[in-house]
Image (spheres, rainbow, N blue to C red):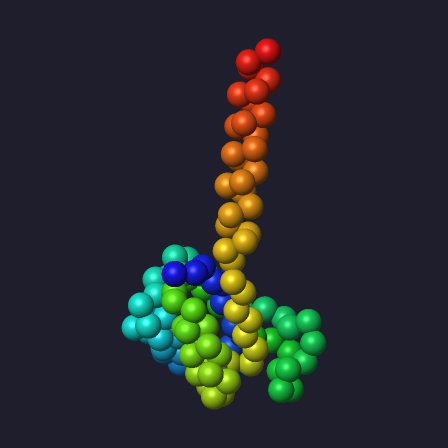
Length: 117
């Protein structure tokens, strides 16, 4: 399974119940597809950088998850047909997660080499 980050913006005129239902649908797609949600953040209502569909505000939601490669494609298809979602972005995180591990190994190796002298 690969690691992904999903950020999406919901319309500001949705009720709290509608927002929760939309987020639950997205989470359900991930879980039923064999994925696992590792982090969920609700950033609340924020001003958009530019107007989208005549809206200047939106509710931001961030989900980090690990899932098989077909899940992001299914999520994009579903979000494209969901009117409550203004914008979304899915990013694969594998490279970013491996970089700190590699840096830590290099640091440890350098420390060991410097202690040998």
